Image (cartoon, rainbow, N blue to C red; front, side):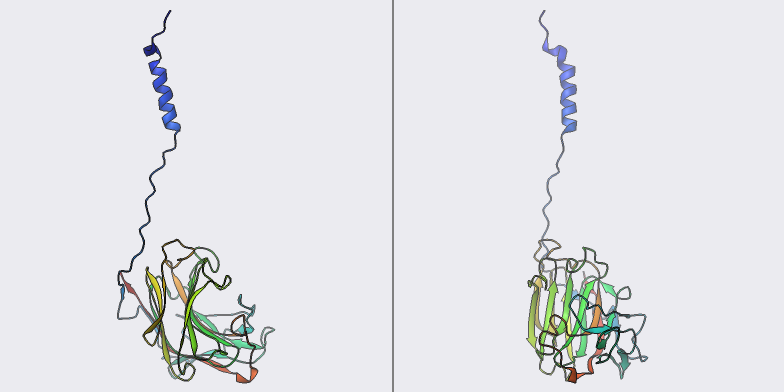
Length: 281
């Protein structure tokens, strides 16, 4: 007896349905829109600032003193202390590096952070400062990711508003570090500029940080730009909260590359003000 194909039609339809159910449906890949320059502006009134006009010590509502003597990842020689190395005098914050023993180290200094007291994504960061001098000093004004969102350094990023090493007087630097571009690989993105009298007069160090770029200035003159390459967080982790750090290191991989001159101490990083302006989006 011949079997009609329509007798098996229900079974064939069931098998087809099961087969379709088992197939993985892959949605189309949505292209990532590149970030373009929208000529971002910044508010004219600071969203956060410290003019160091009150008291004799840094405002505890804005700054925390980090302590420790473990080299800080750079083979630095100082011990950062909670007290005695950061004072407020005559309307300025004064961070002093000293030749003295503490915690097994021969130098002391201070490192102030705004973490959990001043944290921001994007913005204009402006600091008016007078730098220390002398071989072995390494002052910095910089930003780090507030919670290591993408992982430990350098994966979550670093923005150096200003760095200076005393053996290379008056040459200041603005730098970014990421997983792809960092000091360990010697691939960091950086630029330097000569600031005449960096240690004898106040100058204004600034970074404008937008979704498109990080741009560095001294006295409103632009000398560094890093543009978002739109290749992911390994090159651009700069879309999360960052906090500010003010410090003087002694020695270390860069600051101590030509040794330390003990005759120069004490040395001071003097800061007139810190101001942060919110981006207008």
